[in-house]
Length: 259
Image (cartoon, rainbow, N blue to C red; front, side, top):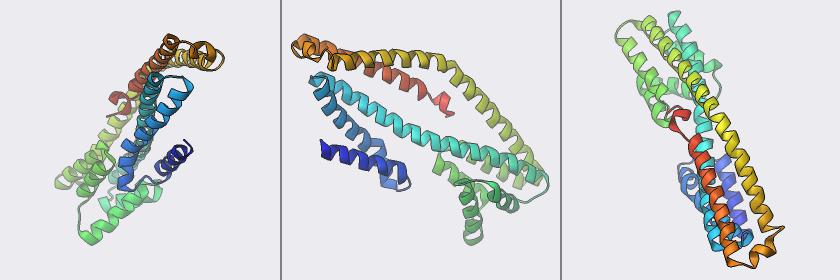
């Protein structure tokens, strides 16, 4: 058990502090949930006195680990989306003032935080050395970060280069900025709509967890003496697992994530 605990802490450290290596994405998406399921099965089987409880605990560990991975990825995506929104606002003003795309990207890079500032600076280098167009570079960012707004910026710049110039690009980015702000307000309203149900579910979960812990500690001898009562305790863990799954599914709704 100590070895498993050490491995779980080691891999958690890797998840949090070494996100850029490709093979770590596979570890985060599959390896960590498997490890969490194994640890939770062992702990649930021991603490709640039955393999059935261990099985429900394993499912709970798997789902929580998957949710944690999704949450970390979503948090990073939302951070970059916020930076893209600021870039669109800044670029709109710069294009309206008659700046060219290289000038817009260069000026925006000076005021944007990481990682977008680094990406914009890399764009300038790649365009100069590899003769790659800005629409191509923004499209690459859309694929890299899975953010559609980058591709929208690419299309706006490409269309503006063909007709209308900086003014047309400024108008297109202005419309994109308005759309992003509307999307942000809509997502905020959706989060408010699920806030009360989430509180209710959290209260119910807290009560069920407290009861399960009391059954496994204070009244442990009562449940240990009867196979039927062990099954009842395991079913209680199953109810907790089901309720947690419902809450996680609610918060993983694609509409809430802006997908």
